Length: 243
Image (cartoon, rainbow, N blue to C red):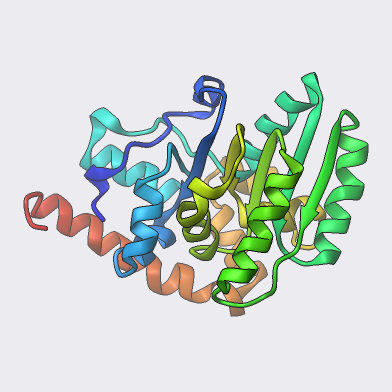
């Protein structure tokens, strides 16, 4: 994957311009960029989305340096996408489906949405917790979504599993709505993981807050893949025509 290949949503305001109907929305950050470089299916899933959102200040800055004419003007977090889409659906009323995470997290989400979004009916499905799904397990997930016929679909199964699953099964999902892979937002919204306070977010330090909060889980993402991302961007800048 190359920075110059990315066609990203420009800013939060551009969320309003995403067309109605069946639309696959994915997010990308420095970590997922690095992972996709050695995972062809993940790269295909990201580049094959209808809308790709810059969920990381590193991606925003890299695009401004490498490809300024196509660069986003700001970070658009998965939580921004979630809030925007949920508020939009709340105004007209409808059904939202949450696919992924544990039954406990899904129960907390259902309880909270009933208060925050009283005009949205929430349904959910918790798939097995495993690295890959069998054909039967994927079919059960697809059938659950199709039977619901939601007005909004959220998928939260951690990256890159969630993105690859959505992309691979997109044609079998008989839906006519926006669908987004926003794994971490499930936990943020449910309250099982604390999102960074506003000050950290405003100063583009949410990554540091997550590292300090969960060093055992996040150290590789930020202390290994972070420097790898910087090197990949520098290499692309110095050798723009090298594959």
